Length: 350
Image (cartoon, rainbow, N blue to C red; front, side, top):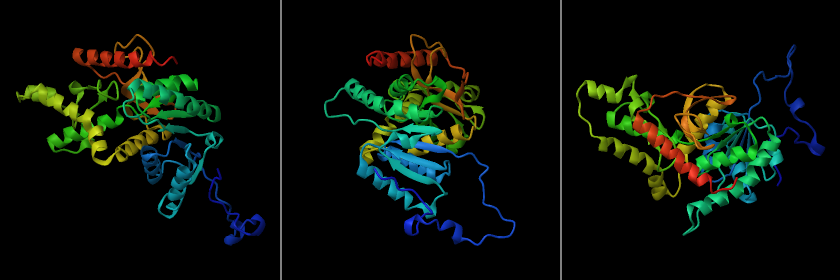
């Protein structure tokens, strides 16, 4: 596939117009960037991949963006559509290729590609097809960018992050899944909506599986620094556990509702992944609930299982897992979630 990128060689026989376009000033020198060149690869140009690419571009997170996909026409069309917005975006080199060699020296590789579920197909069979797809994606990413971080967005994200870790040969700190970062955002939104406050003032995590066995950490929720449940207890304000469970259920059903209404999810996951990219590439040391190797944390054992835990992220990937206090009930639910994922992993044969 022909890659289209910006170039100053527009004249006959490739003459370089850039040197004659400007009149140099006395004592002037060509500008040199003191900022490190940042490169992101996005694999998969579906609705999710392009929402991520668009959000990353508008937030000025990258100097070079590479799009990879197996569908040549779709890939080139998406690339051109983004390039044509150059006058409205921060300066970024945007290109696309079928060849993974174009991804060389990426700082962050974001994988969104995945097979769609066929009518009547089991989740396990779908997962096995996605693992087979990852065998063609992850090894070349690791080959051409051996020092990169891999961020998996494809679903089921926990098991596919495990697969990416195995297939890449990378240390576990450099293989991360988007996990429950978006689930936690939905959770914070719903709590903020109930209390009529800004969601940014709500600290709340969903952990475990990005799916039905996820765990809402009610015991550690705070708003403006005030622990919610202990505040309600001190003020003798009654609340029903069923109300809390209904909010968690609404979080789990959130994506299904969006898919039912518009056919797919895109914008929220785009912002979620862009926030992760910002934290990773700019070494912001923020805490995000993302898919990490969880063995040894919170009593999780039995194998190398990947699931979401509140983790501190920086330019080396996962820096550590936060020691959030869990109730006995929350700890047991988290271990049960880990068992659910391990049962699926054991059937993959990786």
